[in-house]
Each structure stands twice: as C-alpha cells, then as structure tokens.
Image (cartoon, rainbow, N blue to C red):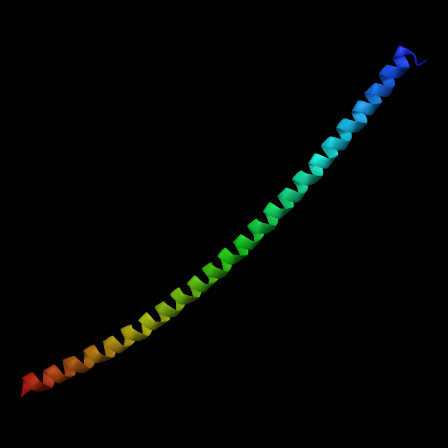
Length: 90
C-alpha cells in the first residue's frame, strides 16, 4: 500500500504535469492567434501604404498639371495685355 506522502507527491506531480500541459497548449493556441492577427495587420498595413503611395502620386501629378496650367495662364495673360494695348492704342 502506498504511503500518504508518496501518494501526495505522485498526485502533485500528476497535477503539475496536467496543468503544465494545459497551460502549454493554451500558450500555443494564443501564439497562433497572435501570429494570425499580426499577419492580418501586416496585410492591412501594406494595403494602406499602397493606397497612400497611389494617392501621393496622384497629388504630385495634379500639382504638376496645376503648375503647367499656371504657366499657360501667365502666357495668355501677357498676350491679352498686348492685344488690349494694340486695340485700345488705335
């Protein structure tokens, strides 16, 4: 027959191993979930950065077009002034 102290040690060892196994399994599941969340966050971040890059390109293109239009307006303004001077001078 087992002595009480030996039974207690065996029971404690059994409980320790069972708890350790459950905690270890839970830890693995949590790590997997964090990995999935991290992967999803990275995909969303990459998509957001692509959209931001695209938007920055559109803004740059718009700015360049606006600069060209400003130059054309300046040229047309000068031509109008010259024509006004010619018409009103006569």
